[in-house]
Image 1 (tube, rainbow, N blue to C red):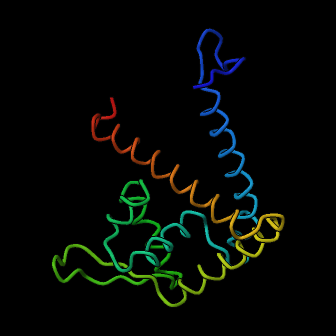
Image 2 (image 1 turned 90 degrees about the vertical axis):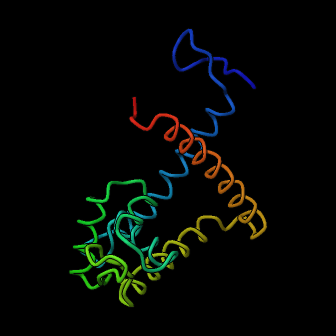
Amino acid sequence: MQLAQHPLVPGVERDASAQELLEGVSSLIRAVRCIEHKHLMPGNGGLRRSDASVLKVLMRDGEQRGGEIAAKLGVDASVVSRQLTTLEADGLVSRRPDPADARVGLVRVSDAGKARLEDLYAAYTKQLRSALVDFDDDALSEAANVLQRLARAVTEAADSVRRSNPTGD
């Protein structure tokens, strides 16, 4: 572990490598959000980031309960319920009663929702590929693998903390 020469808080040592990673990831997130912002324009038929996240979960994992979507996104079920109402009104998802429990609904992405999400990600990919023209496919694949490993490690650590401290105290 390498300690930084100048800690953020005087008298508190910090792990320079971890801090550099955090700053690098934060910079990457800001840069990607700039690309997203261009395409997430509700007036232009775009989607809100949160709605795109819901559609992405449905595309990836198929029909499911709203509570399952909320758990996967790390948000309260009431948040997803409100989003689903809007997405359904826009024709991007459909709901039906769960045959196993009629009190609960199952949600699936509609053909229009799939098309909207595919268009959004096609535009993202085109702009991202243009920005990363100096990186070949192998370098991008390697970077993606490292980022996915980092995300899994951080998620597992966060889940472990949540399980050991369920009240949030």
